Length: 112
Image 1 (cartoon, rainbow, N blue to C red):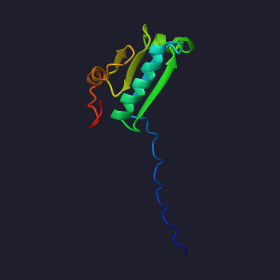
Image 2: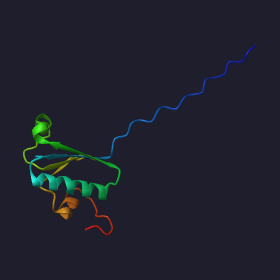
Image 3: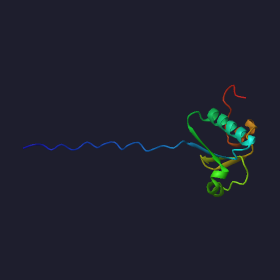
Image 4: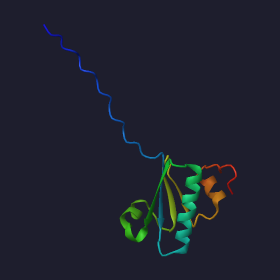
């Protein structure tokens, strides 16, 4: 008589993990202030969360419905979607120390 073996349990595939630091930046692409905000947002997020953040840059003119849903009334506006609570920062993001404080980010060693 043949022995029937118990099938081995297969491990579950890993769940897709989204970045723990999720940000959305609304801009008006024609504006120099918006271009500066994009550069400054990338700088501060790369400094604070290297490789563990997501920054989505959206032109308000092309994403009116999403901007309305997020209650965006001024450009540029940076939203922190995750971690909660949501936070928002309005302006060109040129005051990096103020931005760090607003989002609870400590500057990297040697960063200005």
